[in-house]
Length: 343
Image 1 (cartoon, helix red, strand yellow):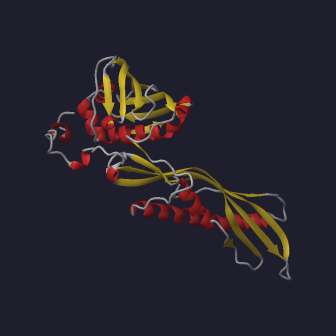
Image 2 (spheres, one colour):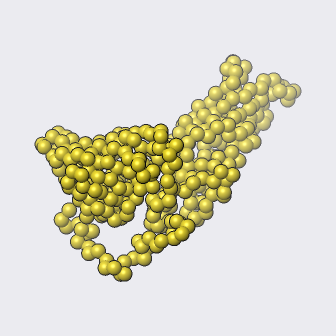
Image 3 (cartoon, helix red, strand yellow):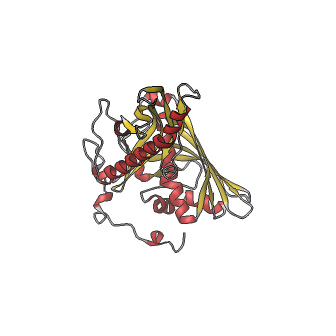
């Protein structure tokens, strides 16, 4: 793009560059100072912290009724910390089920009715942080137990919301301070762009990734951008080598991604198409995925970009999708203007 500062900035001469960009060879393969992209699992840490926050929490005033949050029954989803260029930020998307119990008292103070049930939180994530939704269920739905269910809905809901918000605050503070999760019996693996090789068993099962964006410029601008070495270097803030020829090799993210152009169809007035043979350099040497990027002109002259990737090792699918969004298409969005419109 003419006029962009990054396109006019000369490359540093050998020996004059920023030392942080120089990947020194190390026998232990460490990602020094988290300068390259890495992902660390905090899921077990989160399970422990949330479990403690939901254990034995009293609800109600204890006069005519009393309730208690018993435990975190299930936690589905993942909590990870992304690191790049010495910046760390958490990603979390969880589904929670919390056990509860309650009692209604009679005039003499004895227990008249007892009930147990669950509180389901379908989505605890950054998107739902301000408006956390939950559903209260009773193991036995009867008229006599309905007042206890209502108590848990009102007071228990407040307690669950407070516990979730406190957990998110603790997570962010832990990440900001640079603390690592304690080792687990089965240590979570840290995967970064030169340190994780998928086992052959993992590559046997594959999945697909689909991302859809709307960009303000017309398709030919997107097509040219995705095949231009200097533009990709500027967007990704890392080394890259692209090609405009079918069969030409490509390299992105300082060697973390490699591939070649399998098919190229420049803009014909309606659409443009790029098809790549694509892999992370840390995948099994013989394993490749197929990336199809279609850029279609919209009525207002903008572009609908659809990426469809097949053959992605199942264990790498979420990581790959996050990478497309956070490392390429979102930076392109910031540079060119646009928005995500689906997946």
